[in-house]
Length: 479
Image (tube, rainbow, N blue to C red):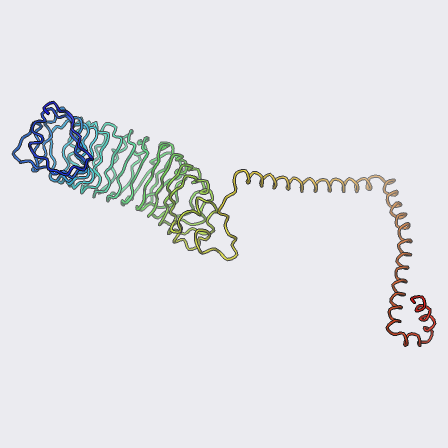
């Protein structure tokens, strides 16, 4: 085992105790990984192995001159962690129980993950070394406190930075604007306050921003380029051009106010937007429907009002929606995406009605849950256009014919006389036959009524003076 350079025992569910005898001959070891195992390390504090490992009083890693990576994650290692000038490039100690201050980093360290431990203290150890080559730093879920460093200009283009779930306070430092290659910035669940500096516009590669669960306030001048301003306690910044690749924005549970800036709707690659737990007000911009790849939208617990934009109907990838506890009113737009969400997504809006809510307005027609297909929509649109054209053509034809006829009679005297003479002759030809016909019909009706009357009143009718002979004659004819 003297020549062994790499040892990987991770994720094997090994339940055992590692003692001095197991590692005493590993003098050439360059890589060791024992993560995700319920291992117990049993070393004497006086034991000095070939790689100079001491435990549990401290863990000295400086003799690992040739090591490139160290992964002891997801164990139950306890104690403090110290090293000097360690040249290990990849250190992963997450999900353990290390405590005490953060160790000092070396200039050659590229990736370090110390998350989900019990480290405490400030970030003073990160400020000692300049020109760090670090590209990945995750120290989230610890007990770190104090102000954030303002020397990020000494970090050489980090890509991932997660300082969330600690107890950091104070302002977000302006030097973060020097991290032009930064893609992920997480400061969630701290006690940060103050303003977002305009230098953040230089972080043009950022794709994930999470400032949720803080106390952001103060002046925020234009951080981004396009759109109307997003206001934090009375000051503005904009979303837009520089953040064309931004995919996630989480500003939940802060003190943000005013309307949603329309500049957010120009972030066409945005997949998640969480503005919940603030005091935004006004209408949700109709342009939010331009975010075609949006998958998560949370606007709950604000002061939005007015109708829910119908443009949300076109967000085919929307998988999570929460508009609860606002002042929305009117009907929920018909559509599978919107009416398919749980009722909790709309609760707390007393003037909102329509499916899936139960408070349907009286007289309201049932909403159509199945939106028409594109083909049906085109057919209906074509029918409507055809009917409109038909009505227009009929009206134009009638008007043209009528005024052409009237205009001819007005302008041509001879035609006018001939027309009225024709009407007079037509009247004479029709009047006499019609009058004679009407008189005959009246006489027949009168005779028929007389016969009916005689049958029912034969005796009285025949005994009447001057009527008996006529009545008898009629009765004889009827017989």
